[in-house]
Image (cartoon, rainbow, N blue to C red; front, side):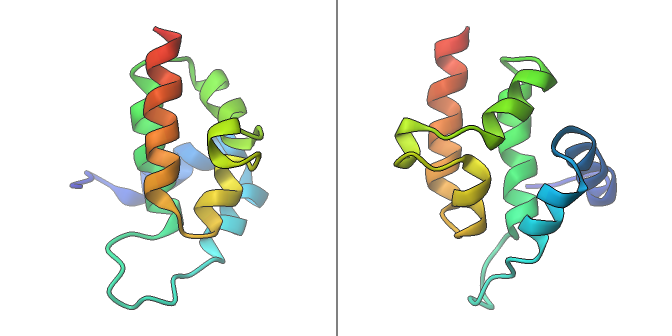
Length: 99
């Protein structure tokens, strides 16, 4: 996905989720050197999906709340584990249910 300024995207994510949470995602570097995205980049992509449907505050709460669709884990935990697609799908389903 093309981004105008990835640093601005990360700053926005930090503003919503807090530095500690984003630092935790950033520290989970992928062991797969061919990975297309980092956990922070995936989180920004998920945020963009949610922003089309809910307020930033609701999106921020969703990221840190345990989700049934994610086996009782929070999206942040699942992103840190590298299951980006699972979080993206859960976000799409949740966001659509909000509209």
